[in-house]
Image (cartoon, rainbow over all chains, first blue to last red; front, side, top):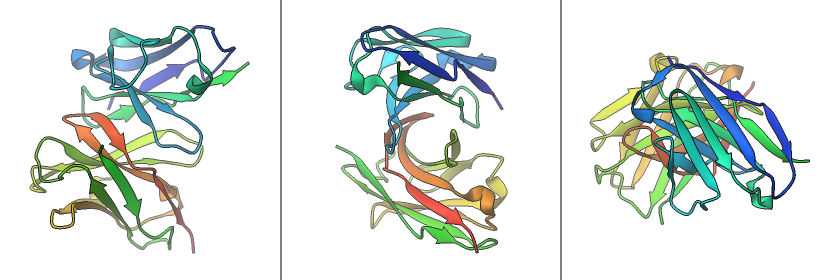
Length: 108
Length: 120
């Protein structure tokens, strides 16, 4: 199965700053089949990005995704208070679907 | 708006079967356009995809790591689908989520999750 490694584990930033989250796969993820989820404390994950770079419904344009092959990035251009959360990447290019361990974006 | 809600016992004894149900509103699970999935999250840890059912219950796919112990089924008359995980141990203690999956692999809608603890 494909192992996803996210970095950094924790990102300490201030509102208004730019966040760059990385997700690296142990082998190539076919057709850029990668999604990002946001999980706030006590809540279920929420779809943010799919197909590596397509924003999900209702996701503001300060969120962007990029990458292909084994390296993917989620960027939040200007952090809003509601963006502080844990972000998970997940690949669906090869069964079983697998998740990264998460990156926590916390308020500095 | 599609809503999913998990239900079932919060405490299961070791070696027994964990059984959960997901009730769906706002979409028909027999519609054929989506898969219906289960995912779990161990306390303070990451996410693990368990499996899904589709094609009006005629097809399913499970994570190989759990395949020998998992069954996902559906009851279209109640618009519900279910998870059975047998021979549980403490390692199966987790928050269990049900989700609607856009084929294949994009989990677009999630339930709020339910904590299941395996303990005697």
